[in-house]
Image 1 (cartoon, rainbow, N blue to C red):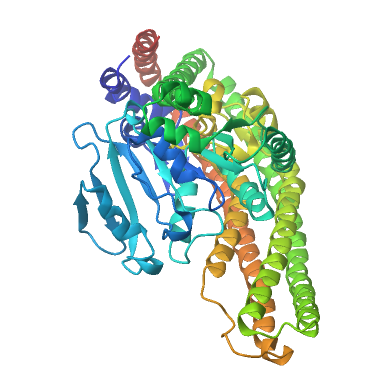
Image 2 (image 1 turned 30 degrees about the vertical axis):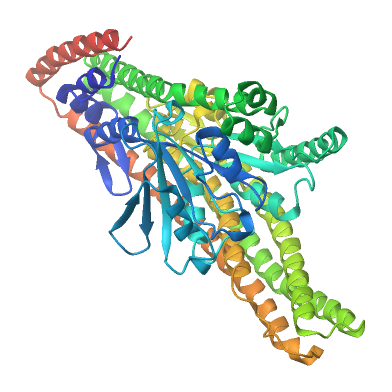
Length: 608
């Protein structure tokens, strides 16, 4: 079924009226019409993109990998030390193959050209030092079937090499990604900054492919050792973040693959592992939209079945006496009221637990910042005592020591965040939510039935970044649960998002200019100010990130309570209206229900 026919079916005014009537969609702003909901979902099906960046540490070969996948020449600069680390998107261009668009921060004008040598004017430090030209991102158009189905590959700055200016841009990409290729090194394998980055970005992605790059001078033994080490760390992160670990790592020789592509050497391209990677991405490109379309159709079928069930219930209610109907509605409202009361008690327990964690994290910010300040001071005292007082050497020692201590703290902070999520999610799993059929179930049981993970809740708006892997079973679980399901799912994302926020903040700090002015000689006293600044920065960043996280969690819980109360109020209003119907109204309703049932049954048949 093509998208136009699907539109014609689901945007029928009669279906929208019935959905609004029998399965009202209540949000914090009030009742939302299904016309807006369905139009938004259909628009995402038509215009959505599948963004796939290549992520990794600087120098892993990300740009070379994309050149080997898509280019006939070295279009993307491969000298990592000389680039300004600007995001580069590669999009489908059937009629403008090779055209480059350069976008600037705070400007509407776009620089357009075909001469690939002009790229260096924007991405090379020699011509654009520190991105003084304020380029936000670059788009290269390629006539390649791999990109034809609105797949966009992105060359993002390497971990630890981002400028302060583009940290926000990079993290914005991560928030909206559909999947990612993590490119790892053989020697050295996953480092601590990479591990921290993976810990906070991987849970946000619906798909992740791990590739280990083998350079020509690396032996088979080194590749095997690196693979074993990388897999062990990935599996450890997967356990920590409750994410499914890959069974294996794909080994690719990017350098050989790139040379083979430039020389049109197909056997060499296959031997490098690049051909296998390309075939995998082509499969994703050709199937992702059909998977989403089938998921949308499943959502519509569930909606239609829920409407039909409500119509049948309403039809059966017409055969009840006024007393029987009043007793039935009273029982339903009483059950709903009891659910709301139970949920309020659970939320109160959850809020108490959050308060305890807030206090603990506040103490942690004070303790760890003071401890790391002393560690930094002690290490610098040792270094200066050993005779290192030269400005440049001491500056490097200070920066490396500071960064190492910060990485220690980030790793520890990450573990604490996931412990908070683990500790509090048990309480959330006992919340009872009314599904689209009007039945109550605990969120934990609903998620199990739908093969649905708490921390990967799909938002009801059905963003294109929804889980492609999960779509085969429960594409629109967030929508099936309605706004309440999205609230509960979003709570898990708040915790993960906090880790990304503090990580991006630290990356921005790393990218700033040296904090110690280069001088001929140093004493420990000269370093006291930057040492104290380090403590203040560390404490402030942890406190700010935690305060924002706990405030958002409290806000989400308030939304949850309000939505349930509004839903109960809506049910009572509906019941009151039905109970006030006259006999003439009942007969008119009976006929209307039969017509509505016939319409829904026919629509259901057309959706098959």
